[in-house]
Amino acid sequence: MLVYIAGSGAMGCRFGYQISKTDNEVILLDNWDAHIQAIKAEGLIITGDVEDKVKLPIMKPSQATKEADLIILFTKAMQLPQMLKDIQGIIGQETKVLCLLNGLGHEEVIRQYIAEHNILMGVTVWTAGLKGPGHAHLQGVGALNLQSIDPENKEAGHQVVDMLNQAKLFASYDENVLPNIWRKACVNGTMNSTCALLDCTIGELFASQDGVKMVEEIIHEFVTVGKAEGVELKEEEITKYVMDTSVKAAHHYPSMHQDLVQNHRLTEIDYLNGAVNSKGQKLGIDTPYCRLITQLIHAKENILNIK
Image (tube, rainbow, N blue to C red; front, side, top):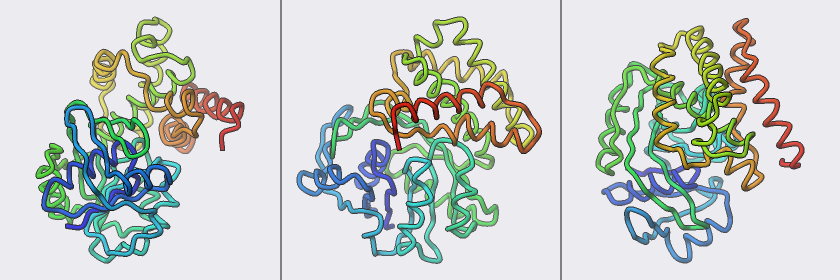
Protein backbone atom coordinates (compact mmCIF):
# COMPACT_ATOMS: atom_id res chain seq x y z
CA MET A 1 0.00 0.00 0.00
CA LEU A 2 1.25 3.50 -0.86
CA VAL A 3 0.46 5.77 2.08
CA TYR A 4 0.78 9.54 2.03
CA ILE A 5 0.89 11.52 5.27
CA ALA A 6 -0.78 14.83 4.40
CA GLY A 7 0.57 17.14 7.08
CA SER A 8 3.83 15.79 8.50
CA GLY A 9 4.11 17.61 11.79
CA ALA A 10 4.60 15.76 15.05
CA MET A 11 1.71 13.32 14.68
CA GLY A 12 2.24 12.90 10.96
CA CYS A 13 5.87 12.00 11.61
CA ARG A 14 4.85 9.45 14.26
CA PHE A 15 2.41 7.71 11.91
CA GLY A 16 4.75 7.97 8.93
CA TYR A 17 7.64 6.56 10.93
CA GLN A 18 5.69 3.62 12.37
CA ILE A 19 4.06 2.74 9.04
CA SER A 20 7.49 2.87 7.35
CA LYS A 21 8.53 -0.05 9.57
CA THR A 22 5.99 -2.28 7.77
CA ASP A 23 5.92 -3.49 4.17
CA ASN A 24 4.02 -0.37 3.10
CA GLU A 25 5.51 2.60 1.25
CA VAL A 26 5.27 6.02 2.97
CA ILE A 27 5.60 9.51 1.51
CA LEU A 28 5.45 12.58 3.76
CA LEU A 29 3.76 15.77 2.55
CA ASP A 30 4.30 19.14 4.21
CA ASN A 31 4.75 22.83 3.45
CA TRP A 32 7.38 23.69 6.08
CA ASP A 33 10.52 24.28 4.02
CA ALA A 34 13.02 23.80 6.86
CA HIS A 35 11.34 20.53 7.85
CA ILE A 36 11.42 19.25 4.27
CA GLN A 37 15.07 20.16 3.78
CA ALA A 38 16.14 18.63 7.12
CA ILE A 39 14.47 15.29 6.36
CA LYS A 40 15.85 15.24 2.83
CA ALA A 41 19.36 15.95 4.10
CA GLU A 42 19.56 13.91 7.32
CA GLY A 43 16.46 11.71 7.38
CA LEU A 44 13.73 11.85 10.01
CA ILE A 45 15.31 11.80 13.48
CA ILE A 46 13.31 9.98 16.16
CA THR A 47 13.94 10.35 19.89
CA GLY A 48 12.01 9.40 23.02
CA ASP A 49 10.90 5.82 23.51
CA VAL A 50 12.89 4.93 20.38
CA GLU A 51 16.15 6.39 19.11
CA ASP A 52 16.28 6.11 15.33
CA LYS A 53 16.87 7.86 12.05
CA VAL A 54 14.98 6.87 8.92
CA LYS A 55 15.13 8.06 5.33
CA LEU A 56 11.63 8.94 4.14
CA PRO A 57 10.64 10.77 0.97
CA ILE A 58 9.10 14.17 1.71
CA MET A 59 7.79 16.90 -0.56
CA LYS A 60 5.24 19.66 -0.81
CA PRO A 61 1.67 18.41 -1.43
CA SER A 62 1.45 19.92 -4.91
CA GLN A 63 4.62 18.04 -5.95
CA ALA A 64 3.21 14.55 -5.32
CA THR A 65 2.36 12.57 -8.45
CA LYS A 66 2.03 8.85 -7.64
CA GLU A 67 -1.56 7.77 -7.07
CA ALA A 68 -2.22 6.98 -3.42
CA ASP A 69 -3.81 3.90 -1.93
CA LEU A 70 -4.34 5.73 1.37
CA ILE A 71 -3.96 9.35 2.45
CA ILE A 72 -3.89 10.11 6.18
CA LEU A 73 -4.87 13.71 6.91
CA PHE A 74 -2.89 15.34 9.74
CA THR A 75 -2.85 18.95 8.59
CA LYS A 76 -4.10 21.79 10.78
CA ALA A 77 -7.88 22.13 10.54
CA MET A 78 -7.79 25.56 8.87
CA GLN A 79 -5.32 24.23 6.27
CA LEU A 80 -7.53 21.29 5.27
CA PRO A 81 -9.27 22.81 2.20
CA GLN A 82 -5.96 23.91 0.64
CA MET A 83 -4.38 20.54 1.36
CA LEU A 84 -7.25 18.72 -0.35
CA LYS A 85 -6.94 21.01 -3.36
CA ASP A 86 -3.18 20.47 -3.57
CA ILE A 87 -3.36 16.64 -3.51
CA GLN A 88 -6.06 16.16 -6.13
CA GLY A 89 -3.47 14.73 -8.51
CA ILE A 90 -2.79 11.69 -6.30
CA ILE A 91 -6.43 10.84 -5.58
CA GLY A 92 -7.72 7.98 -7.71
CA GLN A 93 -11.14 6.34 -7.81
CA GLU A 94 -10.11 3.85 -5.11
CA THR A 95 -7.92 6.13 -2.98
CA LYS A 96 -9.01 6.01 0.66
CA VAL A 97 -8.70 9.13 2.81
CA LEU A 98 -8.48 8.83 6.61
CA CYS A 99 -9.08 12.01 8.61
CA LEU A 100 -7.48 12.10 12.08
CA LEU A 101 -7.71 15.85 12.62
CA ASN A 102 -8.79 17.30 15.95
CA GLY A 103 -12.11 19.12 16.01
CA LEU A 104 -15.56 18.91 14.46
CA GLY A 105 -17.10 19.19 11.01
CA HIS A 106 -14.17 18.02 8.87
CA GLU A 107 -16.26 15.44 7.02
CA GLU A 108 -18.32 18.28 5.54
CA VAL A 109 -15.16 19.78 4.02
CA ILE A 110 -13.74 16.45 2.83
CA ARG A 111 -16.97 15.52 1.03
CA GLN A 112 -16.36 18.48 -1.32
CA TYR A 113 -13.18 16.80 -2.63
CA ILE A 114 -13.48 13.06 -1.94
CA ALA A 115 -16.23 10.58 -2.81
CA GLU A 116 -18.04 9.58 0.40
CA HIS A 117 -17.40 5.92 -0.46
CA ASN A 118 -13.67 6.52 0.18
CA ILE A 119 -13.81 8.64 3.36
CA LEU A 120 -12.75 7.25 6.73
CA MET A 121 -13.17 9.31 9.91
CA GLY A 122 -11.16 8.59 13.03
CA VAL A 123 -9.88 9.80 16.36
CA THR A 124 -6.57 9.08 18.04
CA VAL A 125 -5.07 9.52 21.49
CA TRP A 126 -1.48 9.05 20.31
CA THR A 127 0.79 11.99 21.11
CA ALA A 128 4.04 13.32 19.65
CA GLY A 129 6.18 16.44 19.60
CA LEU A 130 8.61 18.17 17.27
CA LYS A 131 11.99 19.14 18.70
CA GLY A 132 12.79 21.03 15.53
CA PRO A 133 12.82 20.57 11.75
CA GLY A 134 13.15 16.87 10.94
CA HIS A 135 13.21 15.78 14.61
CA ALA A 136 10.18 14.05 16.16
CA HIS A 137 10.01 13.11 19.84
CA LEU A 138 7.79 10.08 20.50
CA GLN A 139 6.77 9.02 23.98
CA GLY A 140 3.91 7.01 25.40
CA VAL A 141 1.36 4.62 23.97
CA GLY A 142 -1.90 5.47 22.22
CA ALA A 143 -4.66 4.02 20.10
CA LEU A 144 -7.14 5.05 17.42
CA ASN A 145 -10.66 4.31 16.31
CA LEU A 146 -11.94 4.75 12.77
CA GLN A 147 -15.07 4.20 10.72
CA SER A 148 -16.00 4.20 7.05
CA ILE A 149 -18.47 7.03 6.42
CA ASP A 150 -20.20 4.83 3.84
CA PRO A 151 -21.74 1.88 5.75
CA GLU A 152 -21.46 -0.17 2.55
CA ASN A 153 -17.67 0.11 2.58
CA LYS A 154 -16.72 -1.28 5.99
CA GLU A 155 -14.24 -3.59 4.28
CA ALA A 156 -12.01 -0.64 3.38
CA GLY A 157 -12.04 0.49 7.00
CA HIS A 158 -11.03 -2.95 8.23
CA GLN A 159 -8.19 -3.09 5.68
CA VAL A 160 -6.82 0.22 6.96
CA VAL A 161 -7.16 -0.99 10.56
CA ASP A 162 -5.13 -4.10 9.69
CA MET A 163 -2.38 -1.99 8.10
CA LEU A 164 -2.23 0.40 11.06
CA ASN A 165 -2.00 -2.51 13.46
CA GLN A 166 0.98 -3.86 11.50
CA ALA A 167 2.56 -0.50 12.42
CA LYS A 168 1.67 -1.08 16.11
CA LEU A 169 -0.69 1.88 16.15
CA PHE A 170 -3.39 -0.11 17.98
CA ALA A 171 -6.29 0.69 15.65
CA SER A 172 -9.82 -0.63 15.90
CA TYR A 173 -12.88 -0.37 13.70
CA ASP A 174 -15.69 1.56 15.37
CA GLU A 175 -19.30 1.15 14.25
CA ASN A 176 -20.08 4.60 15.68
CA VAL A 177 -16.99 6.78 15.87
CA LEU A 178 -18.76 10.15 16.19
CA PRO A 179 -19.14 10.06 20.00
CA ASN A 180 -15.39 9.47 20.31
CA ILE A 181 -14.65 12.38 17.95
CA TRP A 182 -16.91 14.66 19.99
CA ARG A 183 -15.36 13.45 23.25
CA LYS A 184 -11.86 14.26 21.99
CA ALA A 185 -13.08 17.65 20.73
CA CYS A 186 -14.58 18.31 24.15
CA VAL A 187 -11.25 17.56 25.84
CA ASN A 188 -9.58 20.08 23.51
CA GLY A 189 -12.44 22.56 23.88
CA THR A 190 -12.12 22.57 27.66
CA MET A 191 -8.33 22.55 27.96
CA ASN A 192 -6.72 23.98 24.83
CA SER A 193 -8.57 27.27 24.59
CA THR A 194 -8.74 27.98 28.32
CA CYS A 195 -5.06 27.23 28.97
CA ALA A 196 -4.12 29.43 26.02
CA LEU A 197 -6.20 32.31 27.33
CA LEU A 198 -5.06 31.90 30.95
CA ASP A 199 -1.44 31.09 29.99
CA CYS A 200 -1.36 28.07 32.28
CA THR A 201 -0.84 24.32 32.36
CA ILE A 202 -3.74 21.90 32.46
CA GLY A 203 -2.99 21.19 36.13
CA GLU A 204 -3.09 24.88 37.00
CA LEU A 205 -6.45 25.27 35.27
CA PHE A 206 -8.03 22.35 37.12
CA ALA A 207 -6.56 23.46 40.47
CA SER A 208 -8.81 26.53 40.25
CA GLN A 209 -12.45 26.17 41.39
CA ASP A 210 -13.50 28.77 38.84
CA GLY A 211 -11.49 26.93 36.19
CA VAL A 212 -13.32 23.67 36.93
CA LYS A 213 -16.68 25.47 36.88
CA MET A 214 -15.87 26.91 33.46
CA VAL A 215 -14.84 23.46 32.21
CA GLU A 216 -18.17 22.01 33.39
CA GLU A 217 -20.12 24.72 31.55
CA ILE A 218 -18.15 24.07 28.33
CA ILE A 219 -18.79 20.32 28.60
CA HIS A 220 -22.51 20.99 29.03
CA GLU A 221 -22.58 23.07 25.85
CA PHE A 222 -20.68 20.43 23.86
CA VAL A 223 -23.01 17.66 25.06
CA THR A 224 -26.20 19.68 24.48
CA VAL A 225 -25.27 20.58 20.91
CA GLY A 226 -23.91 17.10 20.14
CA LYS A 227 -27.11 15.44 21.32
CA ALA A 228 -29.16 17.85 19.21
CA GLU A 229 -27.13 16.67 16.20
CA GLY A 230 -27.96 13.06 17.04
CA VAL A 231 -24.63 12.11 18.60
CA GLU A 232 -24.84 9.70 21.56
CA LEU A 233 -23.16 11.62 24.38
CA LYS A 234 -23.42 11.24 28.16
CA GLU A 235 -22.42 14.32 30.14
CA GLU A 236 -21.37 12.42 33.26
CA GLU A 237 -19.11 10.07 31.27
CA ILE A 238 -17.49 12.89 29.32
CA THR A 239 -16.95 14.92 32.48
CA LYS A 240 -15.19 11.97 34.11
CA TYR A 241 -13.05 11.46 30.97
CA VAL A 242 -12.05 15.14 30.93
CA MET A 243 -11.20 15.09 34.63
CA ASP A 244 -9.16 11.88 34.29
CA THR A 245 -7.31 13.35 31.31
CA SER A 246 -6.52 16.50 33.27
CA VAL A 247 -4.74 14.44 35.92
CA LYS A 248 -2.67 12.51 33.37
CA ALA A 249 -1.68 15.71 31.54
CA ALA A 250 -1.44 18.04 34.53
CA HIS A 251 2.03 19.41 33.69
CA HIS A 252 1.27 19.82 29.98
CA TYR A 253 0.70 23.03 28.01
CA PRO A 254 -1.85 21.94 25.38
CA SER A 255 -1.35 22.48 21.66
CA MET A 256 -3.36 25.70 21.40
CA HIS A 257 -1.16 27.25 24.08
CA GLN A 258 1.86 26.17 22.05
CA ASP A 259 0.34 27.68 18.88
CA LEU A 260 -1.00 30.94 20.27
CA VAL A 261 1.16 31.84 23.27
CA GLN A 262 4.48 30.19 22.51
CA ASN A 263 4.69 30.38 18.71
CA HIS A 264 2.16 33.07 17.71
CA ARG A 265 0.38 30.85 15.20
CA LEU A 266 -3.29 30.74 14.22
CA THR A 267 -5.37 28.33 16.29
CA GLU A 268 -8.01 25.71 15.52
CA ILE A 269 -10.61 27.41 17.73
CA ASP A 270 -13.22 27.55 14.93
CA TYR A 271 -13.22 23.73 14.83
CA LEU A 272 -13.61 23.32 18.60
CA ASN A 273 -15.53 25.86 20.68
CA GLY A 274 -16.29 27.86 17.54
CA ALA A 275 -17.83 24.81 15.86
CA VAL A 276 -20.09 24.19 18.87
CA ASN A 277 -21.20 27.82 18.85
CA SER A 278 -21.90 27.76 15.10
CA LYS A 279 -23.83 24.50 15.31
CA GLY A 280 -25.70 25.81 18.34
CA GLN A 281 -26.79 28.93 16.47
CA LYS A 282 -28.20 26.81 13.63
CA LEU A 283 -30.03 24.61 16.13
CA GLY A 284 -31.34 27.48 18.25
CA ILE A 285 -29.15 26.50 21.24
CA ASP A 286 -27.32 29.24 23.13
CA THR A 287 -23.66 28.45 23.89
CA PRO A 288 -22.36 31.55 25.71
CA TYR A 289 -19.15 29.99 27.04
CA CYS A 290 -18.04 28.59 23.68
CA ARG A 291 -19.01 31.84 21.95
CA LEU A 292 -17.02 34.05 24.35
CA ILE A 293 -13.99 31.76 24.32
CA THR A 294 -13.97 31.78 20.51
CA GLN A 295 -14.17 35.57 20.46
CA LEU A 296 -11.39 35.91 23.03
CA ILE A 297 -9.06 33.58 21.10
CA HIS A 298 -9.67 35.49 17.86
CA ALA A 299 -9.13 38.78 19.68
CA LYS A 300 -5.78 37.49 20.97
CA GLU A 301 -4.84 36.40 17.43
CA ASN A 302 -5.69 39.91 16.21
CA ILE A 303 -3.73 41.59 19.01
CA LEU A 304 -0.69 39.48 18.12
CA ASN A 305 -1.27 40.26 14.42
CA ILE A 306 -1.33 36.57 13.53
CA LYS A 307 -2.46 35.85 9.97
